[in-house]
Image (tube, rainbow, N blue to C red; front, side, top):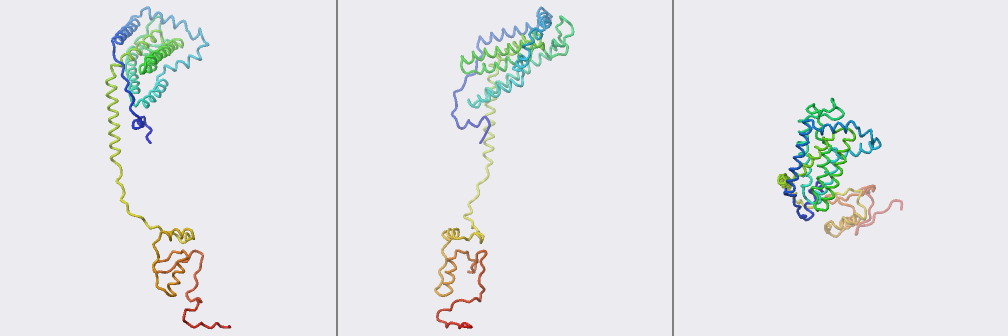
Length: 339
């Protein structure tokens, strides 16, 4: 039995196809506004504007010292923005949906979004090279191009993309609204948690939110590529099945029933009766003493050797060939000594 996600494709009818979200005017306008906000945040940090001064004020306030009772809980809550755990959880859910709906689109959309996240956010991180609050060297400085990798916040962007995929793939408007609210709440909490712990500046979190939202808004442009990738995967699967089906071994010709050899110890009454029932009838011998002796031995159920010599069962000793036998018919009786 096959255990892959394609196993049920041959057993269940095809479900109704789900239409991919289209790039509407509203989505295009939202994408343009988010992109402008993204560029504005980067520019404000590069020129060391009031946003950088706000970053330093929040950092020097040290929220983790103001509310230490929240530290234990937020250390676990921030895991909702880590790439590994969140990607595994969401991939398991989307894998189940792919199996139920007989489509690879949910998993391919997740893979595409994570690839875009790694390329765009990673490139900006390495290009700007900003240092984090714990590694800052000069108060009031933007700490740009110093070999860091903190701007934008990867935790925040990953939370927006990973949990936002659930809303993007929702099949009903009501589910999309609820999942959008959940995604926004989780990503907002993850971003503020990184500021509380002191691992990110506030501007890092703002840029992380914008980066994740841009990826979600741009996904409809990649839907044709995702559809072609899904078609190619299914075609490769069918070719693999055809190659595997053509390598079946040729059937073996029937050689007819084979003789069964039974040991002497199995010549019991019950088994001998069954064997005798299926064996061909014994040849009829001529009347006389010799024929009578052979027929008498045939009733014992013991198999006969080739040539007519009977086989004695195990543990039974045959009498010697010259043992006393009864008088033959028509011959005088032999006197008994000492009689």
